[in-house]
Structures are given as C-alpha cells and as structure tokens.
Length: 262
Image (cartoon, rainbow, N blue to C red; front, side, top):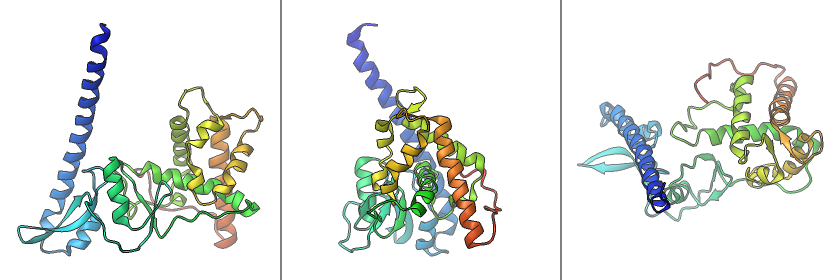
C-alpha cells in the first residue's frame, strides 16, 4: 500500500470506530431514559436519578434538571461545581473535593470513572503488618472488581461485593487483569508491568511490593499467570474463609446468584 495513504486510512478507521462506540452508548442512554418516562411526575426525580445509568456523555452523572416545567433525571457533564467540601474517592484511587468534581474531570478526559466510596481515599503509611499482608490480595481483587464495572454496566448500588462471586469468577477476574497488564503478550508480568496497577494509590499499598515479590516463586523477577492466579485468588479466598470463620463462625460466601455481574 502507498505510504501516503496509510495515515489518512488509520485516521478514517479510528473515527469510524469512535463513531460506532459513541453511537452505541447514545442508543443505550436513550433506552435508559425511555424506560423511566412512565414514572415521570409520579416518582421523586431524585429517586429516578439513582436508577438511571449514565452511558452518554462519557463520564456524566445523573442530575435533576427542569425540562418544559417538569423535573426530570438526566445524565449531564458538569460545567461548574459547588465549593462544597464533600470528598469522595474514585475507583482509580484519587480523592476529589466532591462527586461533581470527579465527573467534571471524567467528562473532560472522556473516561468513565466510578465512585469507590464517599470520603477521602485512605492511604495508610508504615510497615506492612502480617494481618495487612494477608488481607492485601482480597483488597486487590476488590479493586479489580470495581475497575471491571467502570464501563457501561457500572452500577455500585446493584453490584455485589467480592464475597458474593464464585471461585470461577475470581479466576476470570484475575486472568482478565493479567492479560490487560501483559502488554508484550509474553505470558509474564515484569515489575514494570505491575507498576501499571497504580497500587500506590490503593489502601494497603505499602504491602504491594512485598506481596508481588512473594508471588514470584522462582525469583526471576517475573510473575506468570499460574503464579498470579494462585497469589490473588487462592490467598484471597483463604483470607476470606479465615476471616468469616473467626468473625462470623461461618465459611459460606454468598447465597445469591451472581453469574451475570462480571
């Protein structure tokens, strides 16, 4: 192919892909809004806002706005935010002054960023204790679970916690993140790959280097997929079962059906 055509062709394909993805999100947004129309004027719009999933614009959140004299829930990108101090923590481990500021930046960067919890992100410092080290793999999988829901299906209020997913779902979660981090597709994660986790912004991040070093069982500074899943899934479940047996006197995880949540 003539090289002079290569760059324009790449640009055209990129634009077409973006249009397809954008069109799909807009269609899902229209469908979500249509499903709430029968309840407009009959149900508190604030409650409807809690039910409305925002697919488009990317990064938007639901706010109650006035349309033809009627208050309706609508997904919007904030243009300005109040100075009210109500810190929240995103699933990427960053603290924002309030939820409006989180979505304002998400819209600007055109990135779906979920809310992890209200209040600032906690980043404890100090040495990693034995108890924290044991809990760390469970916290990592919790974080992966949140990241996996940052797309169109992200719904914190409806989604179960990690304790409610099966062993097979944990394996799928760990394997999916492994393949995303393995950029050169050599089947091994280097320390450079692991830095992409941004675990320094996570709670218990001071346990991360020690934990991932312990996953490298042959000490070659690489973590293979079996080492990765054994570290994260097996240790996570071992910690959780031990926690449940001590705190709750039970080893049962969660009785609800969660097959469609991942």
